[in-house]
Length: 269
Image 1 (spheres, helix red, strand yellow):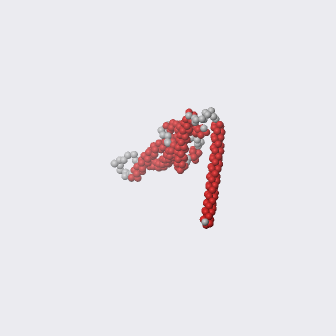
Image 2 (cartoon, one colour):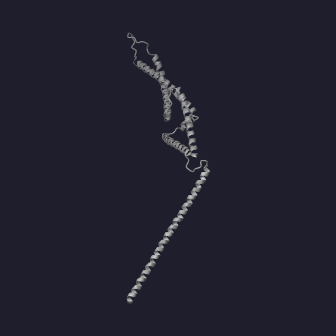
Image 3 (spheres, one colour):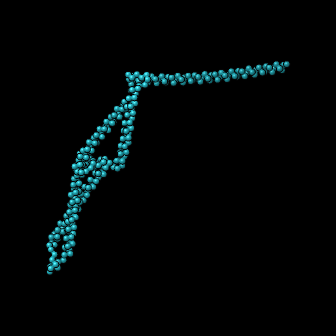
């Protein structure tokens, strides 16, 4: 009965934890849906967060590159303004445009790169904002009160592997406990339907224990009595053996005395 209560309590605890996990997963799924992000599998959460951190680093890098390009554009802008507006084949002045053309091409190229980086930066900013919002929502529904405590609680790969194996072992033990509980319940039902012959169904557990103690005492007494009987039988057998040996010795002495008397009579004759 004690084992059955423990098994039932353990099963209820597992069910309660499972419901809590399902509720949190549903909440996280709803939060992620707002940012078109899927809910990562439990074993992929660490890598998922690392990817969001990498995206944030890329965004910061884009910001730095954007600032560098803006500096170069600001430096070349005055030169671009000094370029001639049109080229005339009939111009009498031989204007050296090689350096100006090179500066113009460089400025146009930088302007194109800047536009590309601006678009990439906008995308990275949006993804970073979504990742931060998701992380904040997940952190709010987690047992961690801050990002620092979450990062401090992250496990290394070896520990994760060890805990996964331990989880598998506990799940296996839980299944075995459930199977044993079912077997015990079935055995109890069978016992209640078909009790052993001679067993009073109204007998309490205390009375059964007393009866078992009495039977055990009788068994010990019978065992002791059997030992005494075996010892007595052995002693009787030893006594009979010694008696037979003594009787054989007397017969031998009488036979020898008879032969001696016959021999003496023959000598006299």
